[in-house]
Image 1 (tube, rainbow, N blue to C red):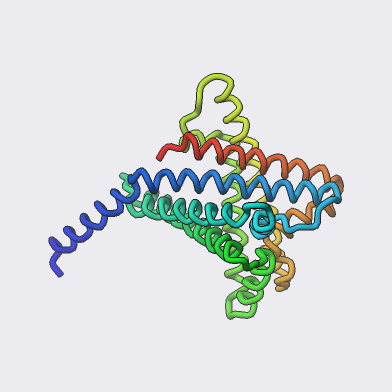
Image 2: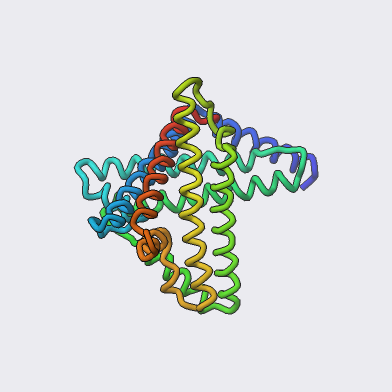
Length: 276
């Protein structure tokens, strides 16, 4: 195939992707994705706070949140909304990564990989929600343990799992930094006045709290790799429950739960005022 033909095909594909990404329908569904992501974080936070005060036994993770929706009146309808929103958000991010342009190729590819990674996460969450919407169930903690066990049983799996833990830790640091330095303001149109101050507060607290939670998840993954014990890698639910065993663990977990609620509320704001 000639370079001219390749260029024509590439430009045509880019044009189709750009049209899809900028379509009003996909953008509205992507905003819905931000909103349902916020709802899931608030549900996870509520379960975590209940565990912190000794009044909860559910899974403080995505499967626990989706399970709560499944058993609520009208929950199946909400679950299908979650599926549609998260899948659309994943597609929107994937198209954005494909269309990304920049003067610095290295930075462009770094940002592209980041956007693709986020898209994959939302697709996986949409898949989990799809399972619950169909009347099934799954355990995020169990899936994490099984994946860790499979890696540890494979040649070089310890190194891969350790690298995965360090990657999650880096993502946690990224969230803390994004919140502390208010870099999230690049993603939204911050309202003026008192409303803007509230949005900034939600973003700072929410991003920092989520970053800390991800760091705890990362520590468990690293411990599982070092000890070659997949039972240590229990995902978000295990990370939050591990905090209860610490001195003042209850108040710490409650504070992080409040922070995740702030992040969920920020996601609602992002659904409303995201720069798409």
